Every structure is written in structure tokens, then in C-alpha cells.
Amino acid sequence: MIVKTFGSAIQGVHAITITIEVNVASQGNRLFIVGLPDNAVKESERRIESTINSIGFQMPRTRTVVNMAPADIRKGGAAYDLPIALGILGASGKVVTTAFSGYLMMGELSLDGMVLPMRGALSMAMQAKQEGFRGFILPAQNASEAAMVNGLEIYGIRHISEVTAIFNKPGTVQPLDISGEPDFFQAQSAFDVDFSDVKGQHHIKRALEIAAAGGHNAILIGPPGAGKTMLAKRLPTILPPLTLQEALETTRIYSVAGRLPQHASLISRRPFRSPHHTTSDTALVGGGGIPQPGEISLAHHGVLFLDELPEFKRKVLEVMRQPMEERMVTISRARLAVEFPASFMLLASMNPCPCGYFNHPEKSCTCVPGAVQKYLNRVSGPLLDRIDLHVEVTPVPLSALASDAEEEQSTYIRHRVIAARRVQEQRFSGEAGIYCNAQMNSQLLKTVCTVSPGCRQLLKQAMTRLKLSARAYDRILKVSRTIADLAQSEAVEVPHMAEAIQYRSLDREGWGN
Image (tube, helix red, strand yellow):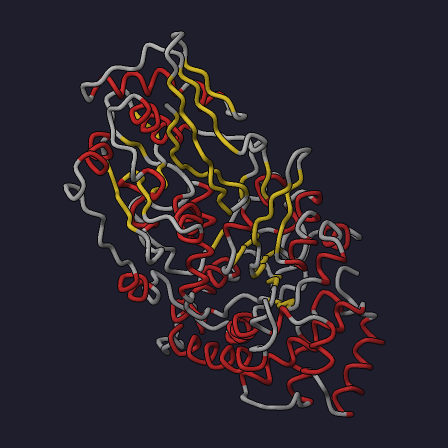
């Protein structure tokens, strides 16, 4: 007797439905699993046998063949235990199989029949809904994230006996009724930090407001203790809240990577990832034997903060260049290529020199001649060209630190950022995949960033004097458009352009010389 159950395989952040065919023959006494399984799947025989025994049944003592189709896709992980076990029970006549075709099943089994958590539940649920399955049977620990897919019956189970009851005794086990949306919207404004915690630094706050409003990359350059990291950690508090679609995309990445907090249904706030400077290129962009998302994908729709940028290995930084432009990273292997989304804001910080005090208003730089330029050269020109705002951070005066004056709260800054983003949403409503000024292509740039003769002359002078590249030219236009949006101005005026040009600190003459 041949019985079919259905599972799912993850490739990148997408799921592929796997058909698991089980044939219990009349002769022989071995279990064969075919269809390109990895070692974790092959080892399932002992777990499944112990599980079946734990619920009062016996493993068939005949020749049993399990085929996992399509056979050219590698199946990895122990989460196939549940569909294989149900297929064996169904083929042995222990479980009614008439409803198998309507359900996707996944979950790792322990020896006593408990169902253990897995990765990628949200992607699998989305694929199950797309392919017309009635329901999804999965571990209870993963049920809340799968329940975010509407129109799909979600059965969060803790023991295999609950699964057999679903098919043998219809109605005894009910699908879960979970809605994480109210908690999602409530948690969007809950932050532990605020811009009002930072004394002074108004020009840095202004630069970060511009970066948030247009989705621009930024770098903070200043001496130790000036507040670069403190300011960077507060950037998510002024970013627009995640939309439900953005939250689903981000949650799917965390689910595939196994980074979703326990019992969480959705990522409610924009990610803030801050990898250490010793990180490898694979950890940053993703990869591995079984490709997994890296830090730039975990920062999707959020912020990737690289503290002490020159301390990162040059090779690690250079692999980011293409994903920063494409907002997607492709991991290629001999037999497959997977894509991970990587639409993130890059925020970096660095000291101006090895000792940290170059251009300091009070302390003298102790670096030898040429050391400053050598230090800056650790970050390549092409990478700096992709960073829209270069912002100098100076130490906060003691008078400002001791002041009792109240600083502006993140909430008020966030309102201005959201207003500017609304303007951009209307502007790009007909453009697929473009939501903010930083994502504009060259064609849109010509249409959207029309400038007056005065602005054009000012930009021409800046390009000539600072010897800027063509990419830097585009960056200045995009930033000036964002500044105009914050001012609710339809046209880019000379003050907007002048402010955008001043955020190219590392292009100015004198730096490092």
C-alpha cells in the first residue's frame, strides 16, 4: 500500500513542497529512505521506531520504502520525522489516510513521541497557503508564527498522539485561533532607548533624521567617547514602523535562520544588527554548506551597524558592495543558487585616525605623518561612495552635558520622518520595489531630482573642488531630495543642496593630509 504525506524544504527563504511516498511491501524487513536525504533524515529510522512504539503501535517488520520527491532537491534536517512517521502509520493501516492530502506536516520527533521545534515555519505556511493546503500540522513552539498566515488551519502539537487523533478522531483536536497583530502594533513603539538621552549633538541628530527619512547609508567619524555608538543605537527609534508585509518578510528570514525568539509570532520592530569586527565574510553576507542568511539579511528592513569600520577585514567589507546596490544577495553553489533579501540601512562609525584624536578641538593627534591617510584607506573608495552621509562627530562640551535642558524625544523626530516617507510613498507608488529616495535608480533620479540653475551651479563647484565620483553626485542629489521632503518642499532649493553637500566630509580636501 502506497501512502502520500506532504512536507516542505527550505531553499533560501522560500519553501518547496516535498511529497513523501511510503510503500509497505509484504516481503523484507528493512526501511529504505530515498530521494536525496541527508544524514539527519537517514537517522530518522530509530527515532520513528521508538516514537511509534511509544503510542502503542509496532513498526512494520516488512520492507518499507520512503521516497521523498522531487528527488533532485536535497532534504536536510530532522523535521521530516513527522510526515515519514505518519506515512508509515498510514501505510500500515494504523491511521486513516483519507485527509492526508489536505495537510502539510513537519516536526522533529523525540524517542517518546514529543514533537520538537524546527526552522522555517512561516515560509512553509506561506507556501502551504499558496498551494491550496487546508492546514499545517507543526510543533506547538512554532505555531504562533505560522498562524500569521490567514486562511490556513494551524495545528500546534506537542505529541504525535495528537496528530493521529486529528485523522482517526476528527474534531477531537481543534486548530489554533491565534492572532498576533494586536501585539505587533502595540510593540512597534516600545523602545528602551530614546534620542532625548543624548545631550547636545544636534547636527548628528539632524543627519540621522535625514538618513532615516530617505533610507540613506551613513558613517559617523569622531574621537572615542563622542557618542557615536550611543547615537547609532537610537536610530531605530526614529525609523517608520514596520508594515505588516515588511514584518512578514523579516520574520521569515529569522525563522529560516533559527533566530526567531521563542513563542514569537512576528518581528515587531526594525532589526538592529551590530556584528563584531572579527566577523567573517560568510557570517556577514550568508552562505555555508547549507546556505543560511547572514547579518545583512538579518538586518533586512532595518539597520546594519558596523562599529569601528576600519577594523573590519577589507575582504569582509568589499563583499557588501553589490548587496548594497542590489538589495539582494545571491549565494551560488554547484547544484543550486539561493537568494536572500538584504534591503538594509548601513550605519558605520570610525575614529578619524589610529589614536582617535585627529581634528579634535582640544586634544592633539599623536599619529605619525601618513598614518591618518593609511588608516582611512582601510575603507575603500567604492564603499565610501555608497555611503550617502559622512558625518563628523565632535565631543559634547561639559556645559551641554551638565545642562538640564530637555532634548527632543524620538517620537517627535519619528513623526517628521514618517511624514517625509509618506511623500516618497506617493512619489514612488507606481514603481515596483522602490519605497524611499535612497532606492532611486538613475532614470528616476533625473525625473524626481530636477534642480534649479543655482543648485546646479553649486553642485558643479562641489564636484570640481572635492573631485567627487559620479556615484557621489547621485548620492548628493538623493540626500538633497530627502532634505526637501523633510521640509515638505516640492522643489530642491539651494539650502537643501548646500546641506546635502556638507555631508561628504571624507571627500573634502585636508582629510588625512
